[in-house]
Amino acid sequence: MSTAVENITAPVSFTENAVKEIKKLKDQQEIGEDFGLRVGVEGGGCAGMNYILGFDQKKDGDQEYWIDGVKVFMHKAHGLYLVGMQIDWQDGLNARGFTFNNPNAASTCGCGTSFSV
Image (cartoon, rainbow, N blue to C red; front, side, top):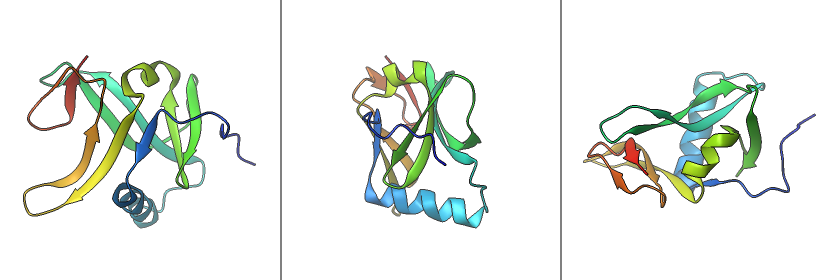
């Protein structure tokens, strides 16, 4: 039985391409049902904060969401930095990987995985 919060709007969203890639990665890596996609931030990077994106188990202080069929874990304190952010998957010649469109970022670095508020 899921304990995901379904009546609370998730602070982040995914594009259709990102959802497809996340589900593909989960299937390829044979991730267990007790794991979800962790979205968050940590100190570091050339602009001050790095994004966290990876499969993990739920931890104390986490909020759980279902976003487009993907179980997502996010520490409650990280929502302040990520509210309104959209995660996309790019698979082009010049760029391949997840991208973060964060309206809260005052500046971002060239690699797109680090930001400041």
